[in-house]
Image 1 (cartoon, helix red, strand yellow):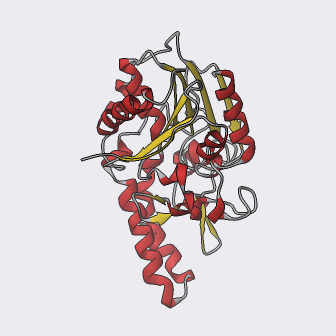
Image 2: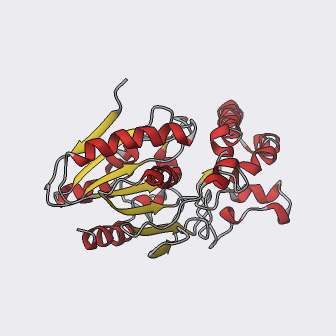
Image 3: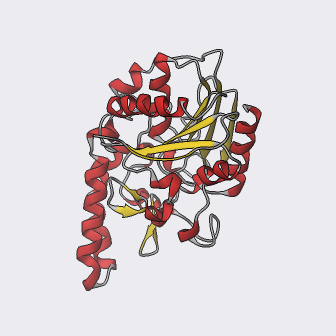
Length: 297
């Protein structure tokens, strides 16, 4: 089965940039965000975006993929066959994408991974391709994420929120919460826990030929349920000592903590006051990443 690829051939004298999406997402998060789905295809991406602060029109979102294409960089991305499957399966697909990227440039390859996509890129670098000259990760849980632990606290939200919701909407809200609960209990998400076998197995280190840069978010609010923000509503059902850093204002983006988002040996790291999705589309963030890529050109 062929991979579902989106690409643009730019100047062969500039690096080719490979984009890697995160858990439960698809290539559209880079090429057509208004069509992208999250949480394994359950919800549209735009529910995570603050329209006032991120973009004026969520149906016309600009991405770094767009920026680089306009600057005549070769860019390529794909939809992982199993977006909520094990990381190793996506690593094999990335190797296939890198083979295609080699044909697009004489100036090396830069990998950009969002969320779990950054870990896929790191795992790929275990077997280094000498053409790879840069790795940029965006909201990647390099030290793991504790969010999967909250699944057992989510069930009480159904009974807590339902009385606040009009009768006609109760089924839809309950269904949505159940889908989120199922996702939080998924094997793929548990693979990202700080004490998981996968996180413990990452024993890579800096490669001399590769420039490392990372970006993290510090605004944990992801979306609202009837004027009750997520993940703030967890404060009502979780003990204070168990409330994860990923969900604390100024400490995380709702899914990944700012501390975990930093590559341990990063040459440069930046934090921005955005959530896990908004950070991909803000112009200031894109400008910082664009300048990093220019320095590697």
